[in-house]
Image (cartoon, rainbow, N blue to C red; front, side, top):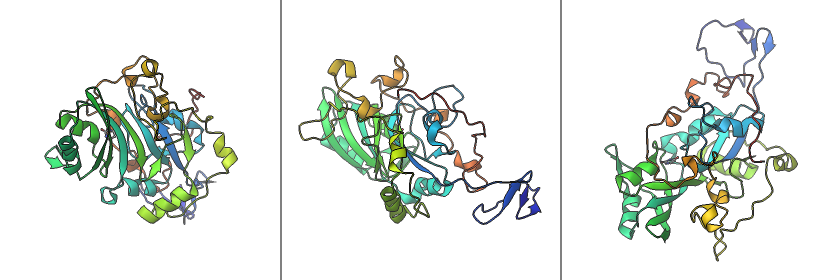
Length: 315
Ligand code: URA
């Protein structure tokens, strides 16, 4: 391995791929162009690139991106919604840094009838592991029998925070979907599909959070359209034209919950059922993947050159 013509043998040597010429076995390594993706993660998929238990991963959903992108943070196996992915490690690190207090909005279905004072408790903060969660925004969407739907915006990324807030207050979370992350929303994106962030979205992120350092223009619209499905007919809009979240199983209510909830991947698995989803120290949530990065490019983390393509599901 040579850096700027000099042989490097020391493990862990750090180089700046933007300014250095890097060669391996005489072949120049070129930095991959930065790519910024929004994935609508369905339920029943782990948000890591590998799963020791063999469950479906986001790698399969991102296989046709054509660059080695990695998720920005995590969503639980049973959480659907907005998950950013990129090969720009600085972008991911900045958005995940606790100091950034990036807002994340969720639609949450809990077991139990939440009263105004219960919502206030979530807003003020719930003690988890001896430390109160930061103030949150919580809005009642509706009651449905003995269940409650709320919209919750938090600015931390504590492990399984929403589910643990539910457990700590006796309102077990039954469904959880992230509708926006740092102001980026997955509306109009079918669960399981991805799109490039637009130049406007990247500009907004840059002005709010300082990343990406350079706004890249995503590939042309025609190319992007190939990654999308035809628009899904939403039958679960309410009278005001606002999306109506939830509403029971599609079979029971005749609603297209897929559009809002990213229906489970394995039909018949618990992924698609409204069981209270206990927070558990699952391996899928530990680690951030970026920590092994040594080059600053996001290259070489886990995905080998044989990064395989998996037949796309539900296209
Ligand atoms: N909070 C949770 O409990 N789970 C998620 O996936 C995201 C936030």
